[in-house]
Amino acid sequence: MATEFRFGVGVTRARSRAELVDSARRAEDLGFDVLHVPDHLGGPAPFPVMTTIAMATTTLRVGTFVINSAFYRPALLARDVAALHDLSEGRFELGLGTGYVKEEFDAAGIPFPSARERVDHLKLTTEYMTEHLPDVPIMIAGNGDRVLRIAARSADIIGFTGGDRAATADEDPLADRIAFVRDAAGERFGDLELNLAVTAMPVDDSGRPDLTIPRISLPGLSDEELLRHPGVLSGSVDEIADRIRGYRDVYGINYLIVQMRHAEAFGKVIELLQ
Image (cartoon, rainbow, N blue to C red):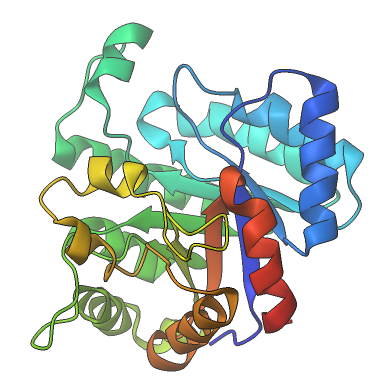
């Protein structure tokens, strides 16, 4: 199991090349290892943005968090993946997901598959990439049994959401999902890298995170419960660094991703963890 920390930051807009290059170079200077681009209609186009980032940096890796695999035929996606892998000199990581926003399929004129069909297509895509592009690391992010079983058996990196509930004295949803992956992966588990996406953290000295995003993604949880969710960080820089050390010590999670709005604040945490 990987023990060195890795840190990623997500790009959700690319209004100009100059702004994108400045953000990428600043992330590199702050100690981030990977810059991620999502795959949503209305957001930046992943492959042009990642190519621009790769051309403007020297050590920063680029990745998708995550490709909506249901939008793509595996061979066509593999063509773009192979090109970016070469152009970045091997600094590309392919993050895959099932896709879940029906409105995006409607806008693209693509029939919205059932959940089972989307997971089946994710499996097909993963198998194709593994066979044809074995040098490209694959991340699969999700929470459900079928997605995590595919990830456990085929991916290099597994992205956890932290679960759909907050931990209590009696249950720990994140530990449950990791235990599920451990059982499904068998002997592979020791070679997997475990990732957690952070959706909220303080950006000033108040210690209080903006809960706007987790309130949307986890509408059934109260603010008090959200503050106990693994994907929400609060407190001082030292307290957040201690919590992240705990993620590695307790869960084996060594790879964390934050949002670009958190980059400067999280850079101070990175300094304590390096």
